[in-house]
Each structure stands twice: as C-alpha cells, then as structure tokens.
Amino acid sequence: MSELTLRAAKTIVDTALATARGHALKPLAVVVYDARGSLKCVQAEDGTSLRRVEIASGKANGALALGLGSRAIAARAEAQPQFVAAVSHLVGPAALVPVAGGVLIRDGDRLVGAVGVSGDTSDNDEICAMAGIQAAGFTAETGA
Amino acid sequence: MSELTLRAAKTIVDTALATARGHALKPLAVVVYDARGSLKCVQAEDGTSLRRVEIASGKANGALALGLGSRAIAARAEAQPQFVAAVSHLVGPAALVPVAGGVLIRDGDRLVGAVGVSGDTSDNDEICAMAGIQAAGFTAETGA
Amino acid sequence: MSELTLRAAKTIVDTALATARGHALKPLAVVVYDARGSLKCVQAEDGTSLRRVEIASGKANGALALGLGSRAIAARAEAQPQFVAAVSHLVGPAALVPVAGGVLIRDGDRLVGAVGVSGDTSDNDEICAMAGIQAAGFTAETGA
Amino acid sequence: MSELTLRAAKTIVDTALATARGHALKPLAVVVYDARGSLKCVQAEDGTSLRRVEIASGKANGALALGLGSRAIAARAEAQPQFVAAVSHLVGPAALVPVAGGVLIRDGDRLVGAVGVSGDTSDNDEICAMAGIQAAGFTAETGA
Image (cartoon, rainbow over all chains, first blue to last red; front, top):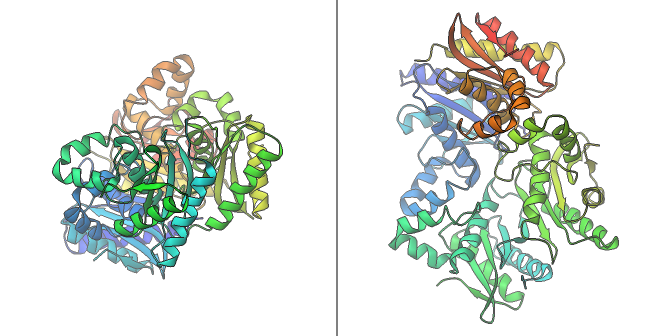
C-alpha cells in the first residue's frame, strides 16, 4: 500500500547526506518511514553517537503520528508540554521527538511518509531533510 | 456490569461525527469505552493521521481512570505535572492524554463510560463528544 | 494514504455482526485496521468479556504485521512456537494472537487492511470476518 | 568504537538485496547494526509487510546481544525455551527473534556488527545476509 518506493527513499537519504557533507555538518543519522510508519531506508554516518538513529526516528515517527512536521510539534510542546509528553508514549516504540528535523513527505496533497534527521543543529537537520525530499520530487512539510 | 449498549455507543459516535461534518472540522477519530474501560465503538474518519485513535483513546481512558473529564485532568497537569506524568504510566496501555476531548458519560449519577475525540482543536473535539453523549440520552461531564 | 474507507470498514463490521446474530454466536468484538495498522472501526457487542477487543486486535494486527492471515500464523506457531512468541513482542502494542479470525483484506492484489474477530470459536470468528470482507467488495485472505 | 563503516554496511545491504532479486525471493527487509548495537543501514523493499523491519532487527539485535548467530539461538530456544523467552526482554526494544537470518559480521576474530534479514524463508534470509557480509570482505557467522 505504501506509495513511497525504496528507490525514492534512497534518493532522499543520499541527498540529505550529500547536503550534510557539502556544509561540513556533524555526522548525521537519516531515517525514512513510509506512510504506514514502516522504515524504508536508514543510514547513519560514521561517528554518530550511540542513539542518534533513535532520535531521528522519533522526529519522523512523531510527525507521522500527529500529521504535523516536528517543528510544529516543537511549538505545541512549548504551549502544552503535558500534552506532548503524554502523546510521546502513545505513538509506538519509536516515540516522538519534538524538535525540528522531522519532515512530512507529500506527493501533492497525499502524505507518503516522513524523514527524520539528527546529528547537527535541528535547523541544519531540517535543511538536509528538505533537500532530500525535494530531490526525490516530493514536497516537504516542516511544520513551519 | 457495563450498562452502555453498543446501540448507544454507535449513536454517540455517529452524532459526534455528524457534528464534526456540520462544522467542517478536520477528520476525527472517536472512541467510546464502557465503564470497565473496554472499547465499545471506534470510528476513524478518512484522512486521520497515523496515531489519532491512540490520542482519542488516551483522553477517554484517562478520564475513566481518574473519574474526571480530561479538561479537569489538563488543569491538574498544569498544577501538578509530575502527578499526571506518573499516573499516565499506571492507567493501562491506552495511557492518559491530559487535554480536553475526553468526556465522561453519566446516566444520572451513574458512570457508564467515556468518549474520546481527537483531530481538531481540543475545544472542538470536546463539543463533538458532548453532542454524541447528549444524543444518546446521557449526561456529559467534561471536567469544566 | 489508506485506501480502506470508513464507509467500507463499517460495512465489514456491520456484516460480521449480522452474520454472528444470524448464527446465534456468542457476543463478538470486531475490529478493522487499515493498511497502516491504524484502527478504522471497532464494535463490541453487549456481553463481550473485558479484553475481547484486545484479542480481536491482536489477530488483525498480527496478520498485518506478518502479511499472513492469522490461521497461517497459527500453523507457524505450532511449527515454531519460539518464533511466534518472540515476534508477538515486536509488532506493536496490539501484539499478535495466533489463531484463526484475523483475516487480510485485499482489493485485487493490494493489501488494504485486516479484520479481527473474537468471541466465539475461532472458526466461527473467521466466518464472520470473511462475510464482512466479501460484503464490502474485497477479497478475504485467511491464511488457509 | 564501531569499525563497520557506512560504506561497508551499504555494500552488505545492496548485495543482500541483489541476491534476493537474483533468486526471485519475496520482498526483504535488511538491517545492519554496528558492534554497539546502533543501526548503520536499513532498506525495506517495496511490498514488505508492516513489521518486517522489526523482525529483521530482532534477528540481528539478538545475535549481537548473545554473541551468537540467530541460527544458534534458534537451537537454544528449542532446548531451553524459557531462557530465550526471558532474555528477549533484556536485550533492548529491538528484542530477539530466534530463527535463522541474524548473522554476525566478523573481521578476523573481531566482531564488527550483525545483519538481520526477513521476508522469505529463514534459510533464504540467511543466504542473503551471508552474501552481503562476504561482498564487504568480512566473515559471516550464522551460528550453524
């Protein structure tokens, strides 16, 4: 049922990491979920810390769970911290990380998945996610 | 022990969703638990995000667990965040979501179940829950 | 992204329950998931035991997780009990119940969701699930 | 501490999937962990069932946790099912799946990571994992 192919997911990850290297960012973990919340593609660069993939996953999984880019979830977490803390236990084992870098992948209006990036500042993480999504021909929804 | 029939639970869900459509709200998930904390009826409209049912369930389950509408739990979460965070681990896998939209169903004084709604603003979610409860001939207790 | 509409899911549940009443079965819980593993529609008849919905959910969720009707998972559980026990912890909080009654919903080759039924014998549960799926114009895959 | 580069991990995954396509196997999920138990690379082919990545992860994570290929863990699970069941709760959220297809990656004597494959028979899954490990210049330890 997933409409996000592995081929597209690989383009997203490869482009996100090429963008990171072009800007000399810290080592990144990049994860792509399809619309079902199933992992399609993950890559962690050499030098990433022990649970960096989990943080990237929490950004993307949280975005899918709520249908909001993680930048919007971060804003909600400031306004209603108890809501976001509570929801983070309900969105599956990948949980929810309420900072920028979890970006919805849309094909027109259609939600086809989400990207999560972690390793540098959350603003830079988000830039890499957006570059990947655009390179694959999709529209990025950050929640800004 | 449950006194909330499936027939009544369906009336609650159908009316909540008709109310949402009448106000052009975002797609909603609506869940109804009986007084034991067993699901009686769930419907998720087309277009709901991946974990919207879980959020609706957390509102209703938390309300039943504490015997308080989730609007009251939200107020308590502001006053005593540690209490609510701790309790959310103790109320079963559906947990507790401390925002409005989890409404107790009373038949006179008797507690017969709870409704949880998620998808639009929590104020609008609560309006739909109340409409459903009233249509089924019960009294809604929001915690306001 | 889900292709299983709420309208179709309601037809499945209503028909499954009508089938149960036509055969004077015990009270049933019927759950329908879409292809994302999100609940679309649940109904529990009056008189169902406290965790009957959870059992129905485990049948359907397990079927989706492995892409196999739960009758096939039951056969695998006899051949490789440790495998099935281990996997039941990995398929999300709804877990996996390896007996008949969890049936995949296919639209041609396309997987669009799963139905879980619990309350009577697992053979009868499965008959009700199949009746619902066929009434909605889909193909049932039981794993037989 | 990890000595398994992303470049090597990608070779493992790409070769495992090329092997699967060469044998016309069912759609596979392939995961590679480094020696710390951090995900380095994941790819899920189009058509994999909802929780296939989790099963592949459980094979590899369990292998790393016990320092045994998952084929050896499967044998242990037959001899001592309670031991393996208990351990599966202690090895982190990726748990442990005691069937073939979780293969340790050795560089000489040194353990550098593990591969998990799921989607076809566990014997075929293991063949793909071994092909990937060998293509990257490492030694595969299946537990046979």
